[in-house]
Image (cartoon, rainbow, N blue to C red; front, side):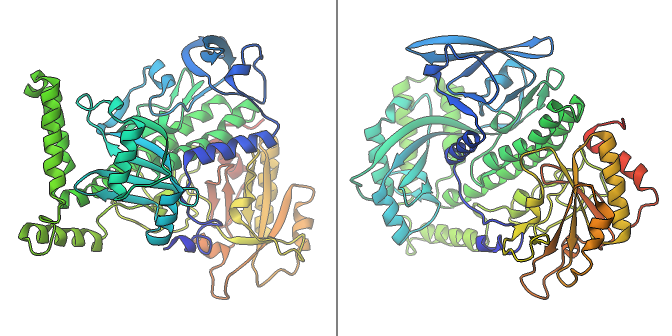
Length: 568
């Protein structure tokens, strides 16, 4: 499946490379449209905490229990001095990154593989480089190996000439001060193979690659919650870090809102950890496999990273640690020079038996698809929850307890509980002249806690829908009904109005790309006698494939399991 296929088959949008800082900008713009006010730290000292305020530049430095929630002490810099502010809150969500202060304050440990690699990240701009790559070598990720330098170049925006360069870093023999702006420019020139006139180095940061998941995501009676990199940290290739973090937020948002609005008890938050922890563990294992696959290429070229890392550990932890620091650095530089020499034309050519064998190995890796994978449709779209705020069935979808294969698998839409709602194009029947087409995923309201019951226009389905509406009203759980009509038969639409008025419902009709395209119920691998209940995070909470003897009793059981609410 190619990126352009996504909008035709499994998603209303195409796959894309989208960096985190761009997402942050979009989120802030959207919050401003919702009348949120963003406050910079310089203006925060005399501003009281209130609703719809975003305080920038604050750092959590202490967490304490409060009578009905959490007390947080935060510090911020204003006019050259640090000011402390105490904040009383019902909930604290720690999304403060891989080195999370919130997580450390709670004493929550990380489990997995630590210290896979130390790196320095160089954020820079060069429109000259961007224009060259657009013309000659368009791409998003460039692994560069030559006799002068080694690095990974990430193209965040070729048109704007925005890049991040990742280079191996071996402290304490190497120091961050060694990576000055001028040194980083020279490194960029060595990797590119020519000097660039417009390189602007904007930021230089060290970081450590880990593959770990927090031992728990909840603390202090579910009042403190970890999400994103604070809860899990992966090797970056494949986009698992931000994708998994966004999934965390989507899963948590409706549950937290449900508690705050008084719909669900606080115990529903337990399902957040239950559902998201298994996905994080699966993605951790997969990201490690993907990282190791990426290392097959330099290893085939005679640049096995495990050798450099082993020498580095020996210098730091064993007999090498007693050597003078200058000698340690000389040894390390010598190892690097020997490694890069393997990339010289003298070694790496078809006439050299060693070079010929290495080039053959390289071709085998690429032709066999054994190198780095960048797209994981089955994992990005096909991840499914097995237990939590859902009514489980015998599971046959992507099993997060199975070891990941590390190889690309296509996403197959599925309607089993826990799965993401499949995509299909639809049109509103209430406005037949409109050409507007939307996705089944758009049936879910992104700005409120509201469940969606999807049915076909059948009498028994209307009967089930009326029961679901009655139970939802008793439970005080917002619910709307969507009637999906087949493209071939939209006569008699008045039946829905007669059966469901005055309840909240709407009718849509399938939009097929061709006459032999599958129907909605075919995509779901169900008949139209079934029904699907969708959660506010677009995941399926429950489904039924045939008629129910007692719809009221069934829906009471379902809504109790999914929302934690007892019948009022």
